Length: 213
Image 1: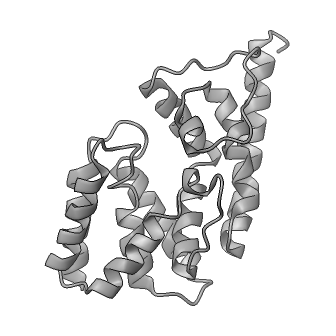
Image 2: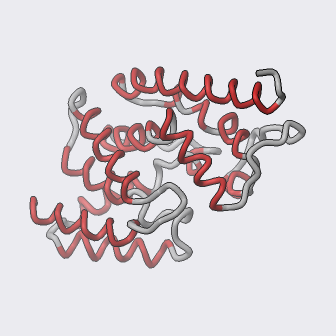
């Protein structure tokens, strides 16, 4: 399936190459690399992990106004390169259930392949790149950086989560929680350092905002 993978990469690059919320093709490449790193310590179907990692954002409602059309485009692309119905079903079992917003009210049990892709995606949401992506995403949607009078939200469902808040609150509402939600030992280890990077940044940001440094 080497040629098939090449075609999938081209499809995803075309779909997300000019995406401007931080879910672009460079994000996809980092998630794939992290997924391959995590795979080294797990017994899992590498093809399923890699394909799901490449495709995980194409039909996400964060990046498209027509998720159903993008889902069909994914199906058509996978069939065109020779993947069967069972494989396609397994891909969607991962990409439909792995996101943070999909698990706000009900925790979806993922296959080991799904856990790996979920961990890889969440690792790219934290640490130094996670900080950059958070401000990039917030700027895209016109969020303010910080307002100490606006408190972080709790107990959100997906519709509430999609409402705009502040960039700094996003760390408390989501990013600081991801370390403890990692599935695999490799991801948990990587997340420890990335968590500290974020905590140090937010602490410094608030100090500077308040003029105490």
